[in-house]
Length: 351
Length: 111
Image 1: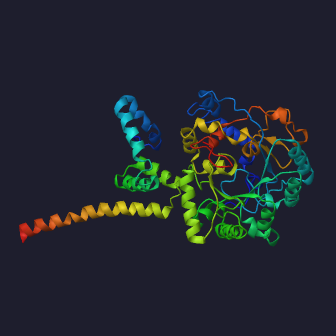
Image 2: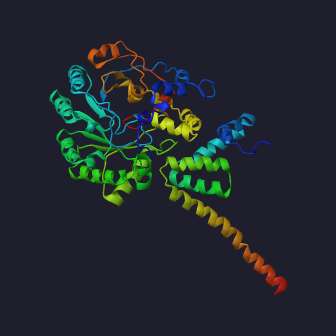
Image 3: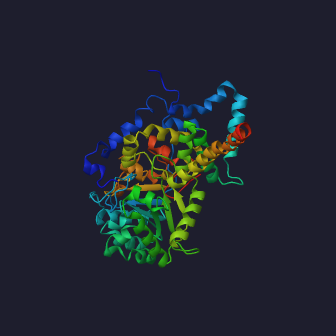
């Protein structure tokens, strides 16, 4: 189980250019597998173009109370990149003037940003009603100052989306750290207690499943059924939907794939599972990702690979919706992760 | 040193069997695909049966394929091992039940 980020460990893969190099060379350079560009060109889907902006996904910092094995952010307690209130103010300006209707807050653990609550409150004042917070659950139990998060979420009708890799303690703790399962269960029960995830409730509580190893997620509907039954039978927990998300081969998950000699097989699995129908609805077509320091990216993964948007408008301070709409999405081989099987996005399957 | 008989990378080439006999190969893969669809049994139940049979058949390709398939379906390692024990129990039972034949023969020859 990891305890430090790759960055802290001085691992080569903490460098985004090193990751791009791995994804561009080897089996893709030799032609053994087609590049993502070649693959989507077969069905005339290159280039992928951004449609109308609907969701602003803001990464408010890479700090996290957990160090998960698969984390594409390489987040952890040792990461100090945190969005300042000034950058948040610039984001609020954009929210006021853009057509985006959803604010999707992620991290790290977004709640650890000292201005997290201020930001949600200010965004609510300028008219955002559709909030998503990607909560790791354990943060709610990590420290007394977070105990009232369920009430805070409820007050602003925040849609809570939480990672839960399995309904058993063993598989969950293997991926996310010892004790994570028990704390997550307690946090889910507390969210249920204030009304989150209950049948018919407007307080949306969705779970995210991503595999604990070098394999793809199974059918989202079947997995949801299994999760619902097990969490209800064992702990009396209710939730709304399960999103099955594919692990993308970047950062810590890429490091794991290489160290365990699964990289080539995993890339084969992704390419074999390629589904052109999923390309139509990949999340980068209606979402813009903003980094802790205000730069714009097509998605959170491109943010971690430091692949900026292909536009003259590259920073929140020079945000220009017209310039960004219709831009060509920046792609590499990691994009196969979003087009495998029924597709994968922060909202679950797309095809 | 000769090459091993089995190469894990050969599993990826399974589909190529259609190249030398297209009609039969295609019919087989259509049938295979249909068998594993959700039916009176769930796809999950079928995957566990396949994992057990992969072991009784001692097919290394099938073991690789259905270990991965069961993992993808969220099946736990305890469930996977129990499924293999079902296969093993039938295999050992099939051996031991022939003991009755041996006993019959002994009784006839030396009774």
